[in-house]
Each structure stands twice: as structure tokens, then as C-alpha cells.
Length: 345
View 1 (spheres, rainbow, N blue to C red):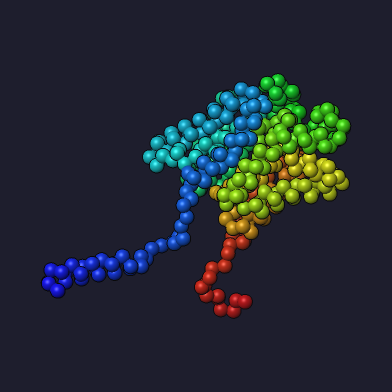
View 2 (cartoon, rainbow, N blue to C red; view 1 turned 45 degrees about the vertical axis):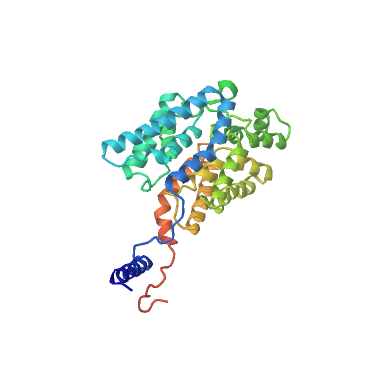
């Protein structure tokens, strides 16, 4: 073999050996093709059918509030990140989700400028002031809703029905509110029904007043099941939260009919599938998430039964968000390879 050919062979062997070398790097070592934008836009897609039904049922006011809430959320995130000289992340879809969830948790008749205020509270006060995506302690959309509820309670309890017709401009004639203050007879009168079956049908298919996130149960469940199928949501979380409310209501009212009504009423479905499962503000481990869901269900029942508000999902999730760090500490997984302290069992 000529020296030139021999040198080429040695160089090739050295190159092959270099390619076979192990690369030492920090974790994570197991990767997948998922990314933040992909996850976020899939969540948006899961919400679109229920939002579209809300626009169909409630009319142009619902569409205006969705557009205003989403656009203002994106604009606030862009302006904040530019002002703070941070990387602009508006393409990842997280701000779009926040705006969409905020709009779906508010009355369709809400004045458009209040949607802007809600987006400011959600994006700037809750999310960006805490460090941006991944650092917020609370669910941004629920912070925006809670701020609007405290500031403008009349506007936040003014509900509309088909074609924007106002039903009750003061107290709000949502099924939860009617049942809480008037009982079963008042609820039957609201739906013009003589049996629970007719009420369940109306609530399941969205023929009722309230926010867009309280109406079409079937589309919200289908969206949640899509997220479970994609692996973005652990099924135990929504099941535990919804079942907790149903079981406790069945015990309190001694009625399975009331239990089923309470599970479909209010924002329980959208809260259980889309907010209690938030990857940032919920606990990290599955065990912690299950404890979180149980707490959300318990607080929801307490507020609905004993509180002044007919609904408790928003505040239950926000209150449990405050316990997320504690839950993570209590149920943190065992570190393999760690040496136990002397005398420890």
C-alpha cells in the first residue's frame, strides 16, 4: 500500500472512531419531537370547536370578545418582551391560549375594553412580571377573570343568550345561580323542562346561557380527550376533579340528578380539562397533580354550597396554585443513588 493510500485509510479510521465516541452532556438525554409551540397550538386547536359553538350560539359579541382578548394578550406579551429586551415568544401560542381561555371564561356580553384589561392582568401582571412562560405561579387566564370579577361584578354577571339578548343584567341567570338560589323548581322553569333529562340534554349540547366555557359540554370533553390522547394531559386530573364535585354534591343534596347537573354546570369541565392541567401552575408529578385535582374539587364544592358565588372553579384553581410548591415538596420522587443519612430508616 502506498504511503498516500495508507494515510487516507488511517484518516478514515480515525474519523469513524471519532463518530463512535460517546458525547458527555447534561440531562435530559431522552428527547422527543414535542415542543412548546406544538403543545400550545394543539391546546388552541382543542378549544376551537367549543369557542366556535359559542360564537354560533351567542352571536357577534362572543366573536368580538374572543378576537379582542386574543389580540390584546399577544400584543401585551410582545410589548413587554420588547421593553424588557427579552426574546419575543408570541409565536409559541401561549399568549393565544391565555386570551382564548379568558374570553371563554367571561360573559359574551362583556364590553370589549374589559377584555383588554383582563388580558393585561393575565399577561403582564400574572405571567410576564413573574418571569414569563414557565415561571408564573397562577393560571394567567383565571387571574384575569378574577380581576375582572372583583372590579366589575355587574358586567361579569350579565349573561346573554341567543343573538345577544340579555337575560338578566344584574344577578345573572346561569343554571348554577338559579339552582343555588331557587332550587330544582326554579331550574326547571329556566329550562322550560319537566324532567332532569331535558336539562341534561340542553347542558350537554350547549343550549344554555353562561360563558362560552360553560355551554357545550360535549365539545369541551372532546377537546379534553384529544389532549389526553396526545399525552399532554393526565386523565386522572380531570376525572378526579369532576368526580369529587359529583360525589360530594350527591352526598350533600342526596340526589344523583343534582350531582350530574353540578358536574356539567359552570366552568367545571373547561377548568378540569384545560386549567387544572396547566403544565406550569400545577404540580409536576402525577401524584401531586391528583392531590391538586382533589383539592380543586373540594374547594369548588365549598364555594358553590357555602360561598356567596354560585361558581367556585376559578377560585379553587387559583387557591390550589398557591399550594403547588408545597405539594411538589411533599410528593417529590425518591432520588436514586442517594445515600441515606446515618440512622435514617
